[in-house]
Length: 424
Ligand code: HEM
Image 1 (cartoon, helix red, strand yellow):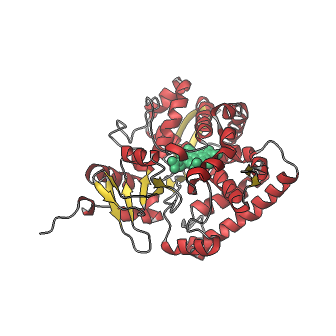
Image 2 (image 1 turned 180 degrees about the vertical axis):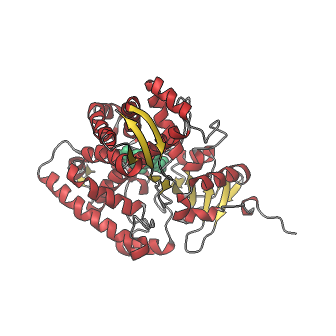
Image 3 (image 1 turned 90 degrees about the vertical axis):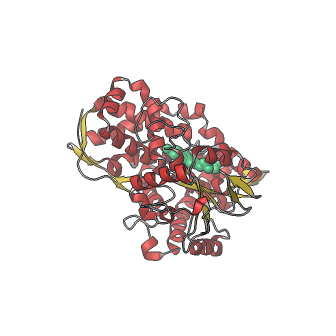
């Protein structure tokens, strides 16, 4: 009998093909179980699903880190996230590129570096620290709102979605009255196939084109305003930025805006909701954090590790490579499964457990290497501040219904989390 290559072994219950089904992300526990089996038995797996490009799924922390670190060989640009082949075709027709948008995450080499430098100093640790007092006031606003909600709320939809949104939109220069509009557009983009959030079911591939068009209407008007009268916000930086002495291309400007605003809040909201969810499950961790608020800084990273809201990015090797013993040809597609790396038992003891003081948390939820998350200092500060301000006021909290996760294989997390709480 012909022996199967190791990556063709059949995985019980959920198979890696599930990663092409946005609905699979609504039950993350099953995905975590699948990833644990894959890390153990077949850390690099070939996935072939109808209607999708074939890809190699890489699940172990060390392999993902090594790929991320070698950006000269493993390119981000050719194919950046997993989409259907028909979506790629529509993107190519409408935008001239299978990826659709042209943001930092879609660029490599010099082009990437030059564009990253435009916003890099804005997001440096020292610049972000300057926003601490304002961010505390913004957190208090939403914590006050939670306290005023008569003992019950949907923590995700009423609170967690809104705080990081306001933080990033104030950095961008978007007025508070537009928060709901930007939140809707983000959820339509990331929750494209979620029947409650996106246009996917109704408009198919053209749904993404519609959301990008709606974003463009909003962003172009704001950029025009800032070009005419720049302020100290990030929209002004983007409106007036130059590369090699020339203004940046309008589509890249739009893409930059969309990247920062969307990447800047859904991810952080998901981490805050996942953090509170984990603390409800583990009263001793909750008690420890209340007793030692200084631990909120390390706990923030732990919540981000558990949520790992960015589920994947893709890379394309420029030459034939071997990863964990599996040969991969130049030009093939590789998926980096960040949420698998975040629970790799080779790196994290008791990976499914919340450990507020986990030492040197080297999770890859922010990625690694030249593309490492530009907003990581901001995200950490927001999560830390939120729990520092919430916990002293929170006397009790319990779930009042099932927690629901968004359907989405790129960026997703908790979308509904009904709770009963007592607060001052
Ligand atoms: C917990 C929250 C967040 C998580 C988990 C997260 C995760 C990530 C990941 C995985 C990447 C890709 C890294 C790679 O390919 O190696 C990334 C890139 C990026 N993130 Fe975040 N992010 C978060 C919050 C933010 C915030 C708050 C902002 C900005 C306000 C932001 C802006 C960006 C940008 C601009 C990039 C592109 C960087 C590049 O390609 O050079 N992110 N993020």
